[in-house]
Length: 312
Image (tube, rainbow, N blue to C red; front, side, top):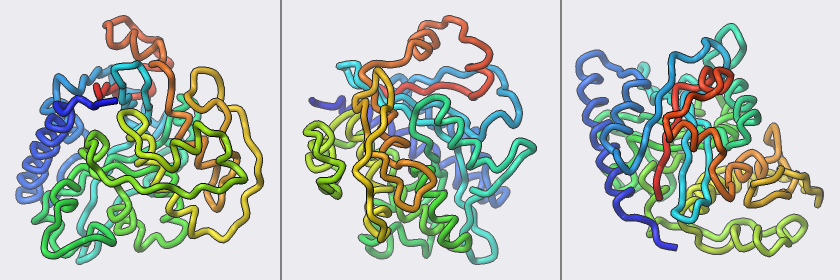
């Protein structure tokens, strides 16, 4: 399956516009607000990204801002519930406000629970500033000085919420740096040339041909988006010395993988289910309703700021 190269160009255009805005506000105020960055991203990536905004969401209902749906021409899609966060410099160190809480509880917990409700993958979009803002910060193990290609693209990056939860357990002090190093630049999700490594293939729970193919073979389109997000937690799982029981659970109808391994390692829940439940054979009806301009139930529209549809 070929991916429309126009989406990659649109995401690059959107990220550059966000970089410029972050650089401006960092110079003026020393910081920027997350919500306008998402608007700037969608505005500059249109029409290949279609944003659908709702009325102000109920305060404290969940910790997420947007539902992002990546859609293949075939109709196969991948959904993620996305919370926007800024990478901040504070007295010579780096931080991301992952531990923010409101009257309903810690925002990360709300994000994970809300993703369970929508049956999509919980994720963060990290607004990390331009390359000048990030001077001295390495983007990961393959970083080259002073600025590598990945650093250039990393101003807008995506990271699994499960990975964030794990980093906070390991060390709150280094969570921001770990998050930045493991996040994937937004543009890479739509780049057919991006590097994809074969993933851990344990015969205990990857003996279903379709799932094994997903793990070890190169993916494209919605499958690529899912695999790059899944890779973040799969790499962390490999470092966890804990045996996996060969159990499976039912994810539900309409999913590409209706039955997934229950293995959770040291994560709070099954990482297979947490991410791969977002892969569906077709868009949920509420997304099509929103796209057509039909009114959505308040219990849905009131929980999120909007829906963004990425046309692969």
